[in-house]
Image (cartoon, rainbow, N blue to C red; front, side):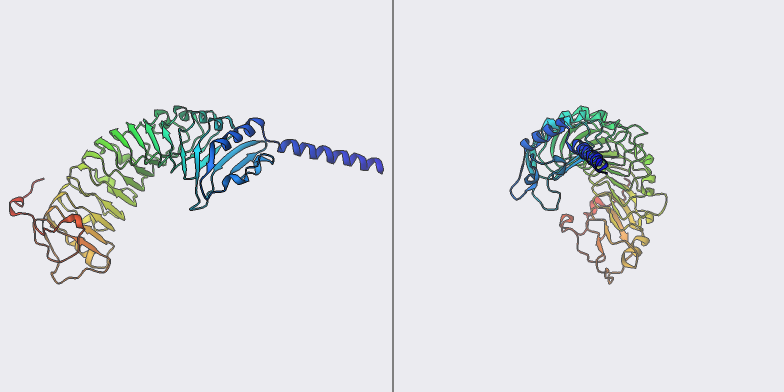
Length: 396
């Protein structure tokens, strides 16, 4: 019996030794974490690195997640809302953690370049470092990360061109590069791309809108310097639920099929689009902004199902359709109707009508005297009617 007890003790000892051995972090990852710690610092009010005591097991550190003896995910900084972030730089040693699948950095003041060594993390699926002060170019090598699904470097100071290889990533679903200083053209995406979200707004990108995959659900290219037409690009994006091309230099017509997309928001304002706006069926998009363009022709009654409709600063002519008025003053869903600065000639609404609470209508500076008083935006000016010499029959 004593002999059996001794054997059992040996077995337990060996089992404990195996567990202890498995708990020892890979030396390469251990040294890489030390390098990361030396290059980053807590901002005042943050205590994220207080829990990084290298005399203990690094797999228990805040933000460090391990799979066996390898670091599999690294979430740098306190993720709680309002918590101060980090400062310093991202050390190239990050690329030596070859088992890394996720790397995130909370908003803060981390500077320097995104390490090119991250291209060595072949298993990386998620890379998010938004709202810091990162600069330099997007490393070309990131385009070789076949497992990368999300790349978010938004709200930094990233410059240079978008590497064409990013568009060919076979697993990419979210590409978020907005609010940076990117230049050059938007690369074309293959038809088979699984991309769902493409957010490039507020950069300095130029050229045309390229071929985009039909899988897209969110597309924002606002506030760039894009030119050319989009009538051959948009109709094939049948899954879009958000579209923002505002504040560019785009021109040409908008195909009627755009108004049939399952959109929650359609923003095309402040471009040079020029065509009639004639959807094929009732439009039920909650928010449509076509303002500050060169759209012309009569207003379509099929726009009456929109919740907020901004058509101001265009070249629309004719009378305002009665259906739009009914939706606005009745119990319909139209809450905002901005028609100022066009060439409209009439609207069927009683001068004694009062708009329901929460409803906005602006008719200033058209070829008619507004029959009802309704507060307009300050930018609409103070002139009620266009000069008579601007109001002969308008032909577009």
